[in-house]
Amino acid sequence: MPARAPRDLTALPYAARLKPFDGELDREGDHEWVHFDGGTFEDADARGSRFGESAFSSVTFAGGRYQRSRFDDVWLHAVRVVGSSLAETTWLDGEVRDSVLAGAQLYGAQLHRTLFHRCKFDSVNLRTATLRHVTFADCLLRDVDFGGATLTGVSFPGSTLDRARFDKATLSGVDLRRAEGLGIASGLEDLKGATISPVQLLDLAPALARVVGLTVQDA
Image 1 (cartoon, rainbow, N blue to C red):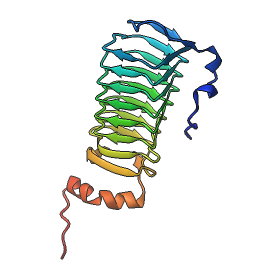
Image 2 (image 1 turned 30 degrees about the vertical axis):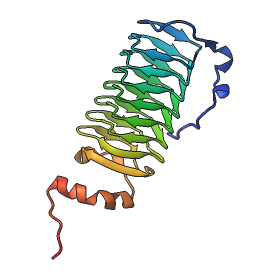
Image 3 (image 1 turned 180 degrees about the vertical axis):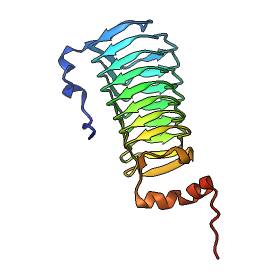
Image 4 (image 1 turned 90 degrees about the horizontal axis):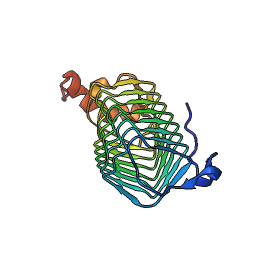
């Protein structure tokens, strides 16, 4: 499924309905047509909340608990998520641009038709997550853990994977051919279901040989 092009805030179909957010994030809150513009949410407890057709601009989430929250058709730009728990959250038709996720917990999350564009992931836990038709475009994914995750129709155009882990992951229709860098720390044996380019195969050959127990040496 081709990725949609990144959009500006004014291009969102619900842009005219957006109203400024003024308040605090609470558990099981229901936020629709809200624009979160600037500011920092520190150690907030918004577990089980719903965010529908909402936008986040230049917002920082420092710590905090957002487990089992739902993000439907949300747009995030220049957002920082540092040490926050987004475990078991659900993302549908989301778009995240020019943002940073560092030390974020997304294990068990479900992401469907979500675009990440020019984002930086650092030590993000996506273990046992389910990703369907997700695109990481021009992103840096450093020390990202996909262990036990299910990836279907996921692509990485222009992105760099650095020490990524795929241990016991299940892949189907995953396209790695346009990734700028393919640094796999572990789980090479679990990349079945992914497509790579001939050049990437040559780069991975020594590691693949070690995985299957091959010794490569001159005659």
